[in-house]
Amino acid sequence: MNPIRPKSIRGAHFVSGVVLLALAGTTLRQVPQANAQKSARSSAQTSAQLSVQQPGAPAHFAFGGNAAEIPAEFLDSLIFLPVDINKTQPSLFELDSTSAVSSISPARATELGLVNFQDPVLNLPGVDMPFTNFTAVDKPNFSAETGQPYLGTLGGDFLSRVIVEIDYARQTVRLYDPGVYKYSGKGTAFPLVFDGKVPVVQAKFTMPGQRTHEGDFVVNTALDASLLISERFAEMHRIFSSHVKTVSSSDPEIEDGANIVLGRLTEFQIGRFDVHSPIAAFVRQNPNSTADNNRAGVIGGGMLRRFTVIFDYAHQQLILDPNTHFADYEQEDKSGIAVVAKGPGLKTFEVASVQPGSPGAEAGIVKGDVIAGVDEEAAADLTLVSIRSQFRQVGHKYKLLIQRNGQAIPITVTMRRLI
Image 1 (cartoon, one colour):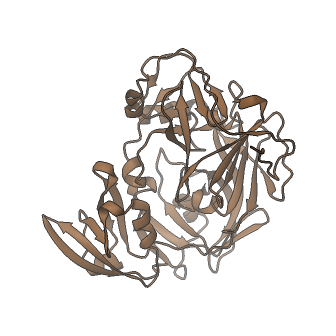
Image 2 (cartoon, rainbow, N blue to C red):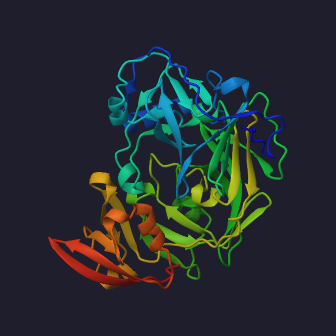
Image 3 (cartoon, one colour):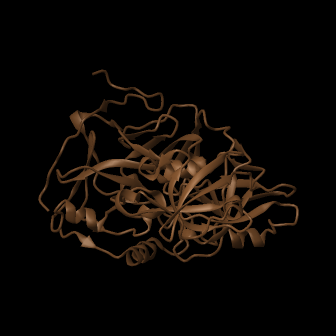
């Protein structure tokens, strides 16, 4: 097999396949999510000084190589990498740049028989990463919000030990040895600072008829939306006005379904890159949110997907290289219907909320309804992602089969632009 040689690194030796280095097993520490987040935030706060995530033991690439291409799975703009621990079965772990530590779902750990083990090794195709300990953290709302079972997270302690290149257009992920990595592509490098252990970059945005606003934005690969903007930041800078069109909304993937306000920016600027007409969600204060009031907001996967993105913690830089989706016009939900996935196989698609005055509300959809089919497709043939994608199609009429109080009710919903 010929090695893959990307343009972005000189002298890279890629490997495929998996090298399993099974070591004996420390106690797997099960930590409730709230306590884990509190602990991570507490350890991250070293006064007001910004600090880079400190790496642990180096990653080991197979066959003496220094790079590996990982068969990642993309769910909309979320990224999942196949990981096995100490020679167990692979699990899809979400790549989360805002999580300080990597962790596994307690339920998944039980399935794999991972109860007590020392010095675990995370095995990915072509690269192994030793850890001194590992935690079990549950995310109870994850499956309902994404339609994907939650198995685990790869966080800052993973990102700090390898260079991570995410090619959203080709839906591939490559890992590089930081010791030999040197970027030589056509992208632009931006200084990457860490507010605690959360990666932050500077960016600018403009609302219609207003001046440009500048601030610090967290980079969050685990956020499917494009942009979150702190409501306090918006109020301080008087961003809202009578001539800026916004719409109230509720998205299960944003702030656990809290009420938000959506608006379309004139442009969002990161360095020399101007993205026109992206959608931003203005969110209220939440103690556990990455949309901290001291920052302007959060950049999510909906924005990052326009680039090949390279997280280079070793050199404290974020590299962006526009791809074929850079100029795409972002489509908002046009139904006003927020849907979550429940039940066996996550095939029960329940209406979590309906925005007043939206096409869904006008058609008679109510909270608690279950979508049993869309047009001629039954729920068994649908996914949460496919339903949300259909609801972003402007002008389309969908015949929904609704289950309500034991009855099947056909309802037609006509999509229209809301912002």
